[in-house]
Image 1 (spheres, rainbow, N blue to C red):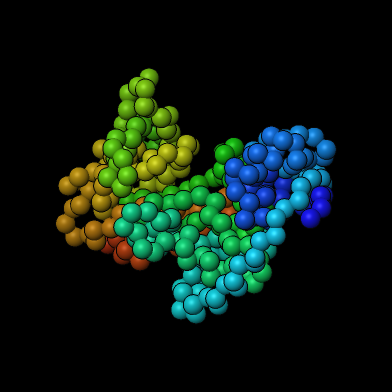
Image 2 (image 1 turned 30 degrees about the vertical axis):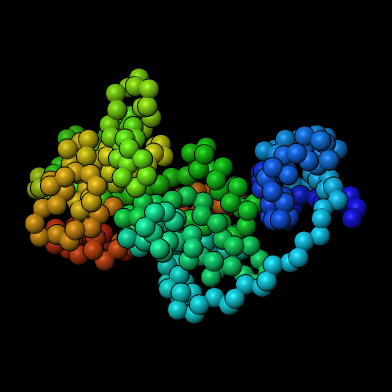
Length: 323
């Protein structure tokens, strides 16, 4: 066992040092990486760094002698039926990322009582000898639409950075009960979390409250069926849990079929009891340059409700990458 030096690749730019180690040396614990950094045994370009140091392409990482560890058993081949199901969700893919159209009712990640979720299913998309795709963001279980995956940790870090710096434009469509007044605007309503676990609720909060979180969303009426129902274009300007759902409720126009917010008003007769919220479009900087815009077709229950209300969604645009 000898000291090694490894050069950071372009794909690994902006990846944290501890996560880089877990990628290349999965048997090394987080605590061990932190200890090796404190002792100066792990260095970047000859200098001491902390475990959360973000790497840049071309940097040289000093690797101290590592214990030999038995290689894990090879992964079993993917289940053909599951692979076909996941592939049917793919809207766009290239060497760096994958974009899915997540169905309503499918959780993004695991949790209490969840036996199936996207993060579990995408293991079937792992290339032989390659990295497992990674979730870049999340959608509520009941929300359908555009969900972004990164093929490698480096790409995941770049895309996550775009989300943090608000360089991503998110567009949602919703059917709400009622008609907001005015017909467009910014909802600037702080939110707070009440309770814990799966039973937790997000509620409007007073500005200045200790638990209040800043939350802003834009909305615009695209069409309406009298004053009974409206088709809204929504964009979250912050990223709070259930933000759009609570903001629509705060306008006294809850999202149709919302199982958690809006009460009886969200469940008028004649409509399927499912959340009518769809992540319609995502536009973001592509890690290889330019911007990528991907649009997801509506879920079946929303298409049925659009037809019943006389709303015309039009054709779904093909993915566009602008250089």
